[in-house]
Length: 317
Figure 1 (cartoon, helix red, strand yellow):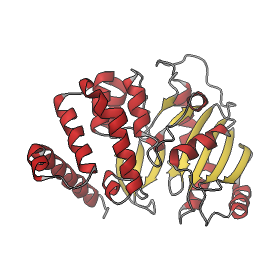
Figure 2 (figure 1 turned 90 degrees about the vertical axis):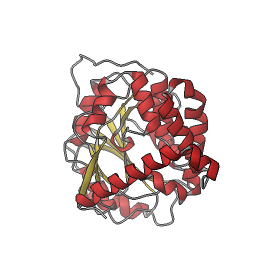
Figure 3 (figure 1 turned 30 degrees about the vertical axis):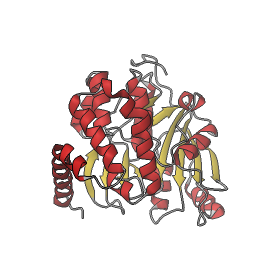
């Protein structure tokens, strides 16, 4: 992967950008998702719409809807479906292999681009940087996208992504995934050289960020949000790991492959926190583990309580 730094060449909006809309059985906000792409002002879009093997995807209906709303900036349209469910990382890699664009932007069913200039602004930001991946904040919303809860990552965390040392960024990333996957734009080269790790089923983002940053590379973050993210789905929150065995397996694998072997890179507190979360993923803590990790139990209980309180204050449930 190329190291950082901004380009000084003039931006060319004739560059094709691929937008990939992903679903597993279109939900009630699916048309909003599609319209947010079709309303983009960027002049050269390669649009791929792909369903990951659900029983409720109607290819003809989706294609008819898109063609009835698309404009001249959609240079190519593919509507497709996997024969069986591949999981998020493999689905991402497969659809990226079909992309004609030099840059690739994913958007999931239920989410929308922030406004009609979001793709254009994110492309400008990506084209100005040499990294294969850039990101941007998203706005966390209710499932119907009508209520805004908070921005992720926060402005303080955007500053960490852009300005703090790589060592500090890595330790922060181990402690908490502060990179918005839904806000990312990828250069095609990322997928030509391997893409996401398909040994995971749901977790395409966190293991990837850990590997990249551990290699000493940065993922620059734009200042402006690019997407509205509906707070739903199996991987929307860490807590759902205990409701989804596949997600829990992914998280355990991530700790075993990307975090615990690199404890020498972490501060004592971050290493201790990682050990606690790894132990918790295996089920209820024993009395000995509860005593050992008592400070962590208190810390995460307080953190969860504050987060829920802030969401309720902003209109959430």
